[in-house]
Length: 372
Image 1 (tube, rainbow, N blue to C red):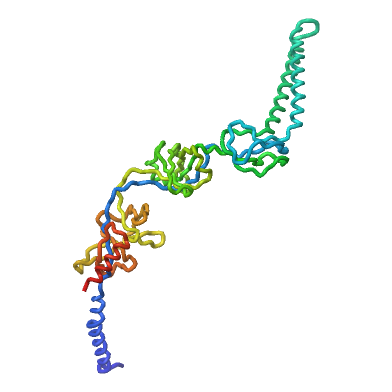
Image 2 (cartoon, rainbow, N blue to C red):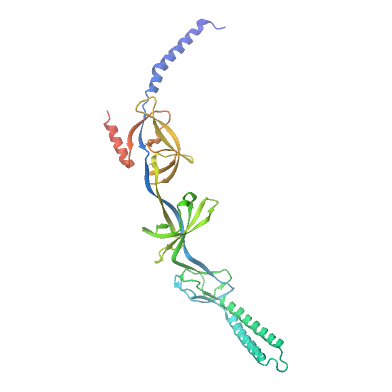
């Protein structure tokens, strides 16, 4: 059993600790200086808008010429990289047997025609009847059909250019055995190029047929090429929720090549959007936040930070477009984001305008040095 006398030292110790905490610890915490940051007042600025996407050029007309039959190459009538005209003979396969059969078929067709002509002239005389005339006519038509079949077989052994364009490279030579599907050479008509682009669905309302598309390529860093939208897909790509757009680009000098990777830009109507410095955006996982400043209720001239989730749009070299989460005129932390928390008071060290980050920080450091 405890006595009242034995508890008095403990009570005195507890009282001493409370006095010490009140006199030293709490005032020290209360005297903790505010966090100094650089702030930015969010403006809404009308700026030209554009869609920028990557795409791969393709020739408007492009084909890989292949063999239709199994045989050996007898002659090659082109040079690699050569420009050819439509219907120009490019390759001949061995057709000696087919040509011989064709001569035979021509002779049989000619003989059948003469037989039909003779009986037709004497029909009704002697033993020549209408049925005999019909039979000779059938023989003649059968011979003509057989001749056409062999002519088609001969044609299968000759490969012509289906359109004018430039040939690629071939790995085959005279005497090589080819079969149906064997690629012989590519042919591209690069007078006009087509470019298929995937554009986010939200821009669909801004796309029209005939709209100008500006093309840039790393192969020609100081030049731009221009084309027009020729078709907009009636379907949205299910996997990526984008719509396919096709543009045609004039290429009279043949400088643009098939499979060349380019950056395409399509202008949009001018639109006023909020923007903040890139340094104001805080990435946490797959979400984006900005510290918004509101006047402190406890300390005059100081602010409290509110962590606001935002949705951003295009990101430029210095500024990021903000779609949701802020409004025009909001004060946000632009420099010093990593030191800010919602519990400690904030002091605005400087206001960021359209100055570069280096200039702003230099001016801010100068101001700090001059303070007593």
